[in-house]
Amino acid sequence: RKEVEQDPGPFNVPEGATVAFNCTYSNSASQSFFWYRQDCRKEPKLLMSVYSSGNEDGRFTAQLNRASQYISLLIRDSKLSDSATYLCVIRNNNDMRFGAGTRLTVKP
Amino acid sequence: EAGVVQSPRYKIIEKKQPVAFWCNPISGHNTLYWYRQNLGQGPELLIRYENEEAVDDSQLPKDRFSAERLKGVDSTLKIQPAELGDSAVYLCASRTHDSYEQYFGPGTRLTVT
Image 1 (cartoon, rainbow over the protein chains, first blue to last red):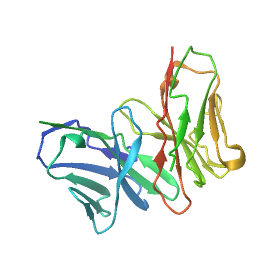
Image 2: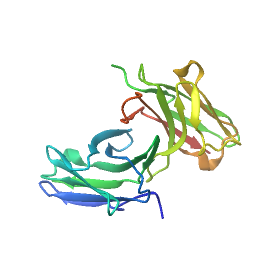
Image 3: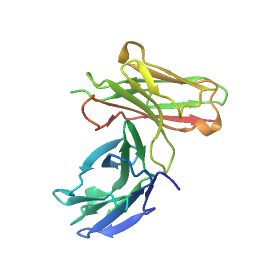
């Protein structure tokens, strides 16, 4: 089992749709959780951290379920500019593990 | 504020040749990472530095890869000799001591022919 597994995708959705990505992790001692966004042929950039109580940033909502060892990212009212690959990142001490990413394409 | 700088952006070499990548992290960032990203995959850690000390190089293929971070600022990653399977994007990232947010450079896209 991989340390970090994401929905394989790709997700193709129309503008305005709501889309959710899931990510599971194998190390129950993991301490921090993040979602990064990576545009085509660009570097990853932090989208948001994921807090235990869940957190929201505009149209983006992140959730953490420690018991089931997964995190999720919900995007509401999708925009064309949301098209990218979304990377799940799990931290255990100073060790950061990236998932393979889920590609999202938002279409007009 | 300048971001993480990497050079070159692209490199094409023949197998068995050496290649080197350079990274200049954000000023004041003590922690520096080198990652390799294959197509359709997430970044995989090669080595992590805390200042000038390599504190995690367990994933670095030491038979052909080497890295250094003299003076705890710039870093270079070298491959000698390169193999076809080394074709990938090599990303450098840095962060401060008190935050786990990593800032990535634009990467070096290596093609080994």
